[in-house]
Amino acid sequence: MKIKLLTILLLFVTFMTFSQENDTDNIRIHELRLDGLKLLAGPIVETSYEFVKNENSGYGVSILVNLGSDSSVWVENFSITPFYRFYFFNKEDYGAKGFFVEGFGKLSTGDNSYQDIFYNDLEEENFTDLSLGMSLGQKWVNKNGFVFELLLGVSRTLGANSAGSEAYLRGGLSVGYRF
Image 1 (cartoon, rainbow, N blue to C red):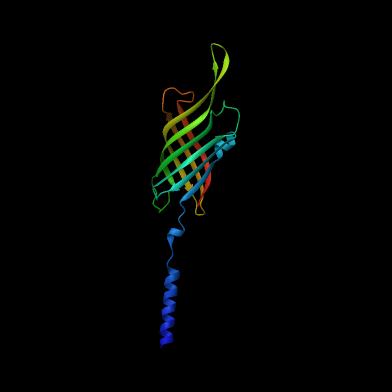
Image 2 (cartoon, rainbow, N blue to C red):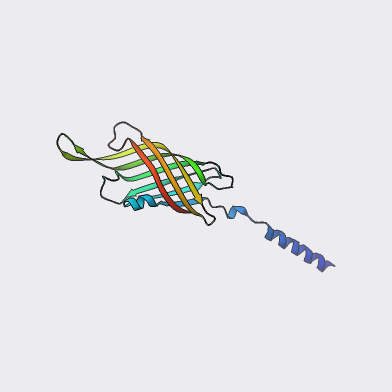
């Protein structure tokens, strides 16, 4: 009788142990992305890291490096862009996917070349700009953690005396992985 009771108790404990799955082990909250559009358009690399805070929001940083020497196409040589995102229409836990609105700040440096109309000389000015802006986007994440993102936004430069642009576009088609 004791052996039967002990066997039933061990089976019960074994089934209870295997039936409890820890969902927090499967939650992917880190994400790395590479902007393929800028990479194809020119030798410009923009990578992003995002931390998924919960099912509705995330924050992170993007870093852009211009590897080309021609500043007439892209005036920024380097930029760092911290951002915060709020996701809408998402009903899954730790989803952080779908339509989102993003607020961001951007610190950028570069060279701006322009033609001086009086002396007919090519002038080049180095600049460092700080700008604030907003973006709209859509993110798709599959079950394996692969990410595709479409983003479009604009920022306005703070400060009146800058050799850089008054406004910057932020956009891209990014691919990445969530882990």
